[in-house]
Figure 1: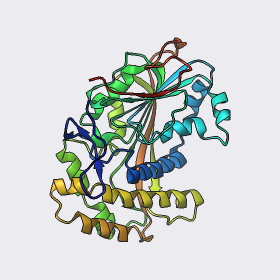
Figure 2: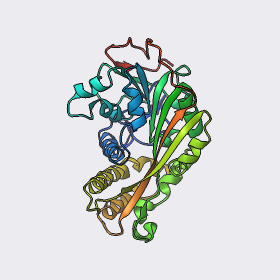
Figure 3: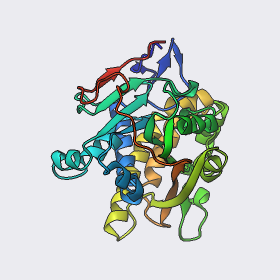
Amino acid sequence: MNFDPFNELGGGSALRFDEGQQDDYCLPVASHSPETERLDYIHDVYKYHAGNIPDEVATMLSDGKSRRILDVGCGTGKWRVMLFFMTIKALEMIEAFPNIHITGVDLAHPPITVCPPNFLFEIHDVTKGQEYEDDTFDVVHVRDIHAGMPDYHDMLTECVRVLRPGGYLLVKEIEWVPDVLDGGDAEERFPAICAGSFRDALSERFLDPLVGVNLESYIDNVSGLCDVHYTRHMVPMTPWSDDPILNYTGQMTRLAMAILGGTIRVMLMDHGESDPDGRYAAGIEELKDLSGQPIWYFGSVVARKEGDVSDPDMQVGMGQEEGGTGGWVGDED
């Protein structure tokens, strides 16, 4: 692979290129400063509404055995960082999960300059399949990668393939369909935000803009999973709630959406939208309106691969010896 993750196409949108051609993923790379901020805002939303680690997964990770985790489309890497450092002292988390080894996979390096010793980042194109053997990982984590996944079903199938029997698949995907709680018409009240051109642009690239809406169905159609738990989470789009957590996640959503409006500018122009800047300005104004209680949703799935959990083999993993120094591994294609 020959990725140039910092190609600038105007509008502050750093899109990703593979051999001189923009790849399927339509948003900027995670190391692009505004996109880093947007992904971190959304990470906080997911954390407060769905948590980082389900209880059953935390129980498995606490059993003292060597466990391997794959983060597919790792973005800024914050989910993995939070996995280790969500307590006040990092040593407390390392002591709680002493034998975890985490591999993050993406098309471009995340904006992390120092890798903890149990972290490894690899540059792979997961649209072409996972580059790991069957039954390799105890947990596979997927979050908001449908905007670059032409075949979401095949991607999930590959995730299950590399899971060990009894391992867990964790998936979260956003729904691109805003709504309002007061019974009003969201499209009438927030026409710029609810405009369908972004979803149409995704479809034009042969991407499914409704993966989040249909996430449960996608999971149901993947073989080899059991104990599937699907949850649909409601999130304020602006800080209209008096509840402290909902107010905070509403603030994070508004900030993230303000950035998104700028980062999709190039894609909308490519789709044929004549005035993306005007739409962006109108969207910013709509985000100031707290009336109507605007909301959005995301879906989350916790599922287990069929089979009994076995003692994982102590093995050389993903380019480093256990207890190694972590770091980066590039795609050799």
